[in-house]
Image (cartoon, rainbow, N blue to C red; front, top):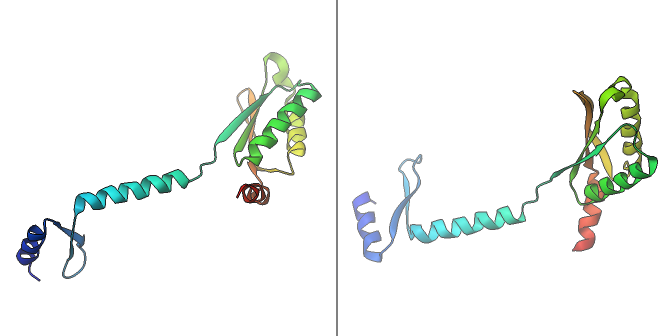
Length: 152
């Protein structure tokens, strides 16, 4: 159908002539209410963004000379974050002359990884950045799936 005829039909119905596929030979057009189409498309995008889950990265900071009880409490908090599906960044910060003994920081990290191994797995190995050691722990997939199935 010629473009002029299609345009005349669209105007007679009070609608718009919208080019759907310009690459096709001949180009494909459609008669529709373009404003309504854009509104519904925006609603669909908003709903899809609403249902999309994003994993947040939570950070927990330690010092190499942390008390065992404090480490236990922070381990429980890390387990909560991992159970919710978030990633956890563990940072051991050294003050003053503590930097001389980085193995103390590694011991703290190893102890924490051991405490949360049932709900989390190491995603990024420990790395030294300036005066701190950092690693990232992500949730174990099977544990996160079980917790979401209980809610539904």
